[in-house]
Length: 108
Length: 117
Image 1 (cartoon, chains in turn blue, purple):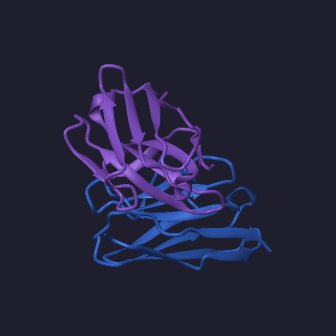
Image 2: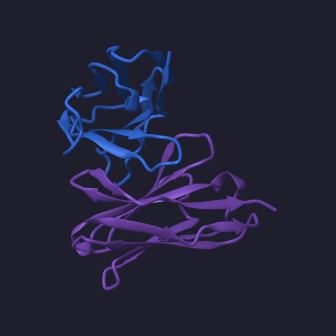
């Protein structure tokens, strides 16, 4: 199975900061990489798919990049509503779409 | 608008069984693969199972293989997860999600399964 490793597991940042989260796959997954945002008590929300395509309605301050095994989610200017946990997910293996362990973005 | 609604969660003893259901509306159901994802209390997301749009192909995480069975009823726009031989570590909120071209774009609100004696 493909393993996904995110870093860091948590970070503290201020409103307006640039935030970067990385995700590494245990084998090449091309651009079969998705990013989700989850707030406490809520279902995950799709942010980015195919490594860099923004889902409809997601603000442009979110940016995804990468291919192969190394991927990045960047939030260019952190907003109060962005404090949440972020997960990467590979979709290279047919319908066994494993997640990274998550990155919690907290208020500094 | 697409809506997914899970049901069937609850408290069950170790070794017991439970059947989760996810009712879908607002979509051409038989055009999409569907999936189950779970989240143990205070933990991250774990992919559990996926099923192709016709129901002919099914996939499972190693942690549930042989114990869980995913199925779908395209006539009634529903996907099910039959969970047998439940363990305390299966305690989680279980979400169903629509799979569109390799990503999960719609999610239900989740149903809590608690495995405890």
